[in-house]
Image (cartoon, rainbow, N blue to C red):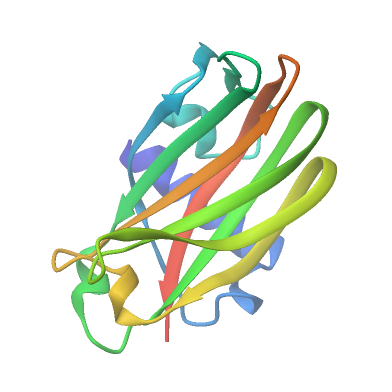
Length: 168
């Protein structure tokens, strides 16, 4: 895990992500859990590098099929009050065009807040600030992000890279 995290930090620097997340502290991947849908392949380590090794979720359900993934990351440095911005680094795609919703957990209010909406996309490759405020960091420096989509037909949500960093 330490080697993969170090490799991830080096790749982030090589890709110029530090310009998006200036002085950002990388998150240590904690977990990835499928809360709606079925995991077809991959695990937490499938999301740590943009290497084509994917975490794939097939949407399931009744008349509307849903896919939902919750990703957590933490860093002891995120416990400090100066750290207030959550940066999402995401490379993913769908098997068919879909709307993607990204939520960040507000620890103070105890609820999810939608911070990213992408309409009618087949894929997304982005590094951006998605939330600002201490309320998105737990007391132990943990951040939770949820990615979700739904459709009337079965589809796949495929994550190649899902990573969090945080900064000032």
